[in-house]
Image (cartoon, rainbow, N blue to C red; front, side):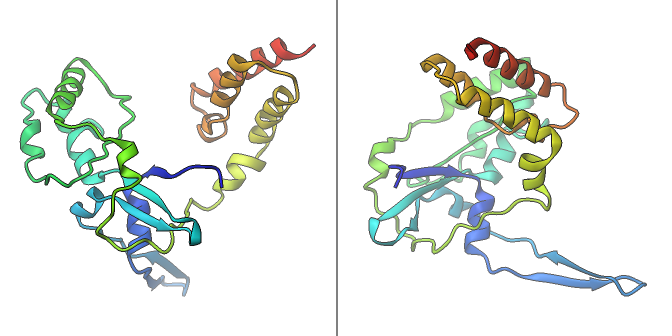
Length: 222
């Protein structure tokens, strides 16, 4: 309905959509019962294929998933290959096939002199860029997914929407949105609608969101 024809998602969404749900039950000495999800498993090659989500008669939503095993090996944390001076990035990509669609995503907050060179080398090693327009018409050899489960930790919604911090922050954004704003101001408002302020409780980066929201509100108020 919104004209969105494809999305990039984390591979954990693929695991949840393609693996049977199962739980392990256990009890403690006092008789308390605990349910634990069994780990889901998706083969590495499954992260590297274009998928389709069935959406009724209007066609399908094209899905590309982050290749989590490869992302972890290449860039994640402090142990990924790009962070090591003795890296061999081509060796990590030798198992890829010509039909693979590789999606690598990492926030890069641990970048340093060594890893910056690693990032640059990784871009050089990647031989082909994706033609996203062509993906709309490409046929996937795999059956369409019937569902794409949503999941979040318990209490996450309360943290983001109904906690005191969240309600104060969103009220500032609502006040800004109620004013006539121009294009650049709208871009700034959209940037402020990320979840970082309510999510990163106690983190110093929260202050930037609050300061920026107050500054924008003061700017647009008559």
